[in-house]
Image (tube, rainbow, N blue to C red; front, side, top):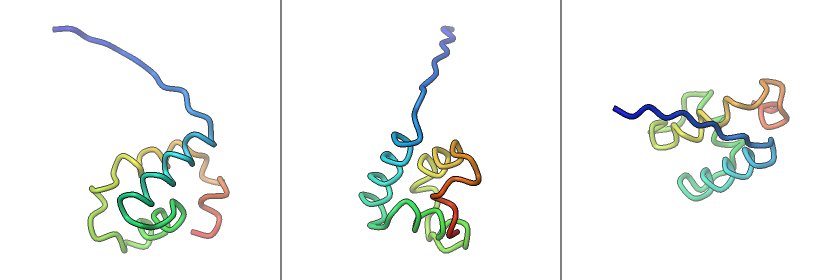
Length: 69
């Protein structure tokens, strides 16, 4: 069995960029709208964007993306 470890360093801008592209492509909404809908329990299939939601959790909870949510 091979065990590998790796890490990926992303800046805030890179995280936001990935969130925006993913949310717009998959849900036709902005990253802010996606996070708000998730927090309000309004995403019909959160599993569809689970990777994006996990990525969003890498941001500080006081990040401007979350301010209006």
